[in-house]
Image 1 (cartoon, rainbow, N blue to C red):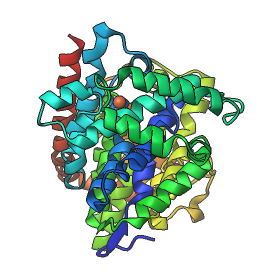
Image 2: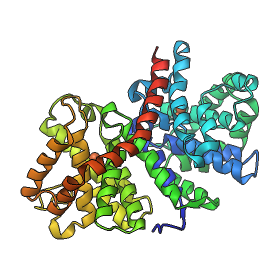
Image 3: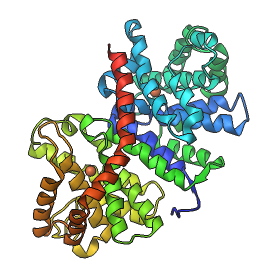
Image 4: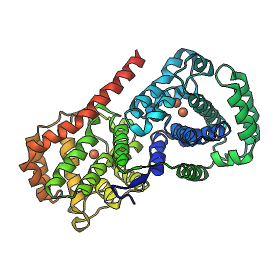
Length: 437
Ligand SMILES: [Fe+2]
Ligand SMILES: [Fe+2]
Ligand SMILES: [Fe+2]
């Protein structure tokens, strides 16, 4: 359990951020985990420096998060098989990841490793800005893509003896140009010859367990304020998928916190509800972009899928080692007082004030936003719709009343807190359009 004012262990958090790539695209499920693990195994043959190894591990875990913010499908295909003409494009997700990571003090050291993780050995020799660790992550990344392309998905261990010599040939052919010969040697002589290595990386549970143990072995405790920043980063990764939602979670977080302050929440509880607001839609990572971005009404089938996002939010947040309040306030935002909400069909007596506040904050923020098929509503219109919902016993009347009475005040606070998200969103889109030219 996290208690504010103390330090937090961010291992679970890092693994959750890392797992988002696989949730959003099953074709690269566990890719980040494997890259982190392989990078670490190579790194530990080179240096015992804790800082070097920890950064390598974290960079491996987060190296592809930029993919979440560019157009996913085409880029994943590109990464698996880059043609010469498109090699420049391969850096797009790395640049986007870099720009995002460097905004957070805990990740400033690994941001550069991420930025350069698709540069070749030759390029790294010429460019002094490229950290050595980037070459390790690059090698690990190519090794894993080779494994994904060649592994037997039915019986993962069955063809190790055939894949290994092929992998060896692949690496040898490119060493000196794409890969550092020294790193290739280390991998082939110290890592890949052990059966245990293959059993480990091809088994999801073993791999996760090892990564968690490794992360915990470093002293990576951060002040609990870091938790807020990490939640903000997760919110960006979700919201920036679409221009329509770019400031959604930031808006929900601030609306909820502003409302909660009128209900005399204590200062630690105000922080918690802000974090819950930032994380409430994290489960959207598991929803296809075609549904999130659909112009017009969802079909019944699509809506069934869409509804599951809040269940995934519950699952992902539950893994983060956070206070129960945060899990509940974030994951009950589609529950209603009459028991007709989803996904748990909770009733009024099970919905705490924090959860009720979050439900109002979410609907209010969404109504105010543009969607592909509709313009955002002015605050007064949004309030009158919310009023109707409270009359139908969907939303809490007291919360809605507080929102109505303090509308202009709250709107000002929300706008202010969405500014940073908006600026960063435009900055990242700017990079994307540069590459698409
Ligand atoms: Fe990559
Ligand atoms: Fe990768
Ligand atoms: Fe939402």
